[in-house]
Length: 538
Image 1 (tube, helix red, strand yellow):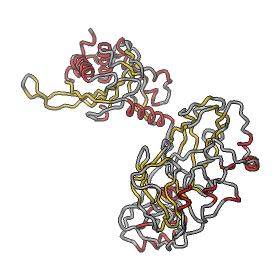
Image 2 (cartoon, one colour):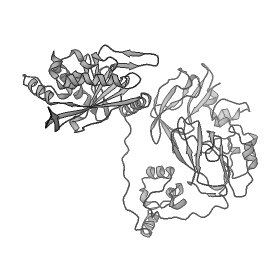
Image 3 (cartoon, one colour):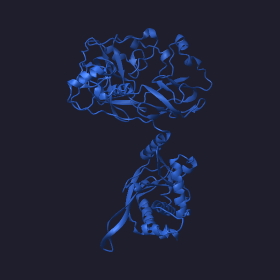
Image 4 (cartoon, one colour):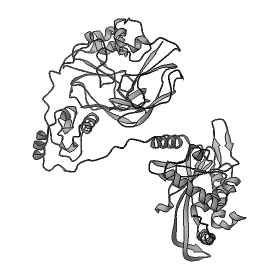
């Protein structure tokens, strides 16, 4: 049976989403857990995975297009299945039956369960929200309101612990907190009963006892939109009779108290946050403060609180490029999947400096310290194939060829062109290749093939004066070498303190493939080549 996939709420303040890219196309087979698309929210671009399996029958939002949360995104079902009724909501409403469907939010054909049909007027059922894209259940870390408290729109009800973080959960309704369904420390699935808000004194014991997550009449599915049910059954929520009149309180603490929704609304309207005066708890700025904002009111509030700091938050939003998204994805996968450890060494560079100066006296020849290090790494890797390896779930691949990736900074991030068979190339050949790669990388002229198949990576920040740093492994490599600046300092030679030149190197290793002793032995071999570079010519 066809399943409607709606635009998901991938952040707590998300109201609409943009499809950055589709990773599946109509006709593709979908397995549970497959990534359907990349969705751009108000906070980040996230992968959206399928919780169902079948054939992708329809795509409702094209790449680059935007739609509201819970609007039709795609339809998954059996191959060849007729979905015309789902694409024509008006007809679907007229033909609605009480048969259950597998669709998570088929709003046009929603069936009102008896449990919600008896919900008193003005009562709002608050369910466990989905506050992250992978959240399946949440834990109440703490309640900031108690039963009997008057709730204003924008008040923080509780702190909810998700699978990713502990987040403040604010109310989008007002009234009296009549019932708490989970105590602090208790957990529940997304959309399970969390609390009930309504007019003071209302008996909601029957509502709590009979609550069903399949009921969609006046239950807030995600607490930001009125559920989509037949118009005749929508109940308008009256204002709580006991709600107090909101009083604007100037913020005198120097710390900005503002709800996430209010902040986003202010940003969208171009309102400076320091012009707003909060009417929520302890001067907290909430939704209605942004909606009711006028420049005159802001001037009056400012004169009443002249001692408030006058600094203005300012920022510029830059849309993430595809390169930046890819870097974030790949490095995140590497950092959180490969168990990194780091080995730090300091090498004497006096001989290398003398070697380079003499080598560059040859006409039309110019090599850099980085070229020397790349060549030394390539030769050492041939002697230590485990450092030149790759990890797979069922095997380890020991590479006998050496392809050294050289990290190059570009405007949008970082690229890693590859010097192939680096151990077989001369120092001038390596230098020419790296200079060519760097120039074309900055002009975005590198081909994908020139950035594939590295077996080891060198990252050099020495030219920026960085003395020591650690890098994230460029998977599927098993290691990456971080190269610092050459530093002149006092060193001990032959029992005497003299002026020397040293360099700090840090080898990051994947412990699944490279044991500590193996990494140390590689660095000993590397030390021999770098401190005596003439041996690389033998």
